[in-house]
Each structure stands twice: as structure tokens, then as C-alpha cells.
Amino acid sequence: MAAKKKAAKKKAAAKKAAKKKAAPKKKAAAKKTAKKAPAKKKAAKKTAKKAAKKAAKKTAAAPAVPAEDLPEEELEEEPVELLPPMPKMPPRKAGPITLAYGGASDQAFMVFALAAEQVDTEDRTYELVRREIQELEAEAEKVVHDVTAISFGAYPRLRDRYLLLACGGAYGDHQGPILVARKPIRAGEVEGLEVAVPGEDSSAALALRLWLPQANLKLKPMPVREISLRVRAGHVRAGLLVNEDIVTYRNHNLVRIVDLGQWWGDRTEGLPIALTANVIRRDIPEELRVKIALDLKRSIAYALGHREEALDWAMQFAGRNVRETLDRFVGRYVNDLSLDCGERGRQAARLLFQEGARHRFLDEAYEPVYHGDEAANE
Image (tube, rainbow, N blue to C red):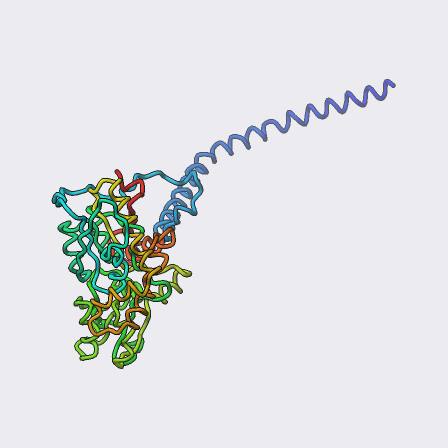
């Protein structure tokens, strides 16, 4: 027993001696580490700096991440000006509500019931005005009419004075403006191609630019009804058809280069192409805007339900076109989206503006604002 105690004491003494011997070494190692610490800290800072620079470059080069893909904590709430301030506008004239519609037969078809007094408009009376779209847009800049048809392409410059209506628009569902020429155009001939278009800022012209954004097309604005004639006469190499000539171009030995409505639908997974819209003065009280929009919607519904009557009335503006041409043309653009564009029609207009801004054909990706939206009453 005494021997065991003696061995234990000897072991404890040896352990204590080993600790004393190791202490100076540990102290020296700690001092060495302490000396290295500032150098390590400096090196870490340098590395972090380099990493930050590299990350900044990468962020600048990378495309912006869509807001919907970001986590909620990363989204910043920035105020978006959906509508610019409303300018001083000429006072509305007393008397009938002026409703201006475009020269094509689809536009006449949609207002037929109002013209024929087939809609109960209570105490509201309408003065209908027919013009080509380019003329209507020029008058809209002066706020001549209470309600007017315009091209969606003209909306950005008129949005301070007018709100979009959800009814009365023309949307092509996998069919739309057609680019034609006297003979096929090869890929190598597209650069700098001269094209007759219905207004340089029309939806059709914007869609054409988006089809070939790098082609530096030379757009020649001209009256809608002259485009087919100019192409046939060889005054321009190609033309963008938006009126009834879409139905008859083959009769004049023209060939189709592209149907922009079909191209757009394929590219956007089925969205329609937004072509024309009805807009209403921003200074009209909301209560009256609601009633006007309903009158127009009822007119379109009546025409769709009484197609033969509406076509008979539209024939007075047909020129040399036969009834079958009008019927086919109206069938392209007067549909459920004309009654109410809904979210699908809104998305079509929104994407048209977004793509226009992305390719720098528009100043910004304008958000379409419709009568009835919260922003419309601000």
C-alpha cells in the first residue's frame, strides 16, 4: 500500500514538471501568433477588398434579377409614378359625348349599336367621329375627344391626358399585322430594309422593330390605305399591313414575309398582340367614366350578337372591299378581348412596353393604367 502511494506521488510530480517545461514553449508560440495576427488581419482585408471588387464587376455585368425572383427581405419599396401629373386640358364641351373611332371596319363594327341607338344610354348622347388612327392620335394630343381610339404605341405620349379602357381594343390572337413584299426577302437583305408603316410609333411598327431589333430598319410612315399600293408600285421594298389589305394582299401578287401576331404569340407563349385601344379623358369624373365604358361594352356585345346587322352598317365605309373581306377582317380583331381585355390583354400591352424599353425603342417600360385602376383616380 505504501509502495502504491509512493508511485502515485512520483507520477504527479513528473506531470507537474512536464507542465512547467511546456509553459515557456506555449508562451513563445502565443507571442509568435500574436505577432502574426496584424499581418493576417491585413491580408484578410486585402482579400475581402479584392472579392468585393470582383463581386461588383460581376453584378454590373449580370442582367437584373426580376423583382418577383428576389426574397421578400431583398425587395425595396420604391414609389412608382404610374401616371404623370395631368396637364391643364381644354374644358369639355357641353352636349354629346364625343366618341372617335378608327377608319378600319373592325372599329366601325364595334360602335354600330351606339350609332344605331340599339343601346340604352339613359340620358347620355354620343357624337361619333370617324378618322384614321394617325389623325385621332394627333387630335388626342390636343384632347379633342372624350373617348378615342389610338394605337397602343401612342399610349406613352398620351397617358398624362387619357386612361385606357378595358373594352373596345383590337388584339390579334396569333394573327396580326403582316409584313409583305413583291418577292421573298432573304436574311441577308434585311439589314437597312425600307418598310412602309402605319405611323412610326404605332404598335405595329414597334412589333416590327422587336422582330428584328438589330436590323436598322428604315421605317417610312404613310397613310394606312396607301401601304399596299406603294409596295405594289415598287416605291418601297416592303410594307406593314394593318387594315383590310391583310385579307386581300395575295390577290395583288404580294408575298407574306411574317405575320407579327403569329410571331408574337409563339414568342410569348400565347399572348395576343395589343394593337389599338380606346382611351378616355382623365378629367372625366369616375362615375361618368363607368357609364361610358359600359355603353361601349354593350355596343360591342350587341354587334357580336347581331353580326349581320353590324356588318351591313360597316359596309358603308368599305370602299372597294367586298362583304366577305370585311367579315374576315372583323373576325381577326373583334373578340372576347374587345369586350374586356382582362389580365391577358393587360399583360400583352405591358410586355410590349417592357420589350420596347429593353431594346431601347421606348424610354421606359410604361405600365398601362386603365380606368378603374387605383392609380386612375389619384
